Length: 171
Image (cartoon, rainbow, N blue to C red; front, top):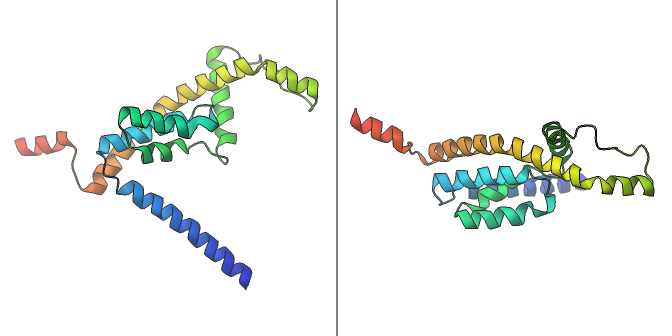
C-alpha cells in the first residue's frame, strides 16, 4: 500500500509542477508577439546540436530581443533526453544530404580506442552536418511554433488580431 501511495504522491507532484508551468506560461504578461517570438526562438535553438548550451543561449537571445524568457525556455526543451535520440539522427541525415557528405562518416563497428579516435577526427564534419540539419529543420519549426503560439495566446486572452478588429470596425 505504501508503494502505491508514494507513487501517487510523486505523480501528483509532477502533475502539479507541469500545471504550474502551464499556468505561468498562459498568464505571461508579455505581448502575444513577445511570447510567440520567444517560443519560436526556443524551438529554433532547441534544434541545434549544442545540447548543453540551449538554455544559456536561449535566455541570452530572448533578453537581447526582449522576448519572453519563459516561452523561450519551454521551446528550447524540444530537445531533451527523450527526444534527442530521434531529433539528432534526423538533423544529421538532413544535414549530410544537403552538405553532400553523406557516406563520409565511418561509424565504428566495435568499441575500441582506435575507433573512438577515428570518430573524434571526423567530428568537424559530423558537427557541420548536425548544424545544417538543425537550421534547415529549425526554421519551419520556429515559424509554425510562432504562428501556433500567437494564435493560442490571442485566443486565450480573448483578443482578436489587430487586422481583424480594424476590418470589423470598417464594416
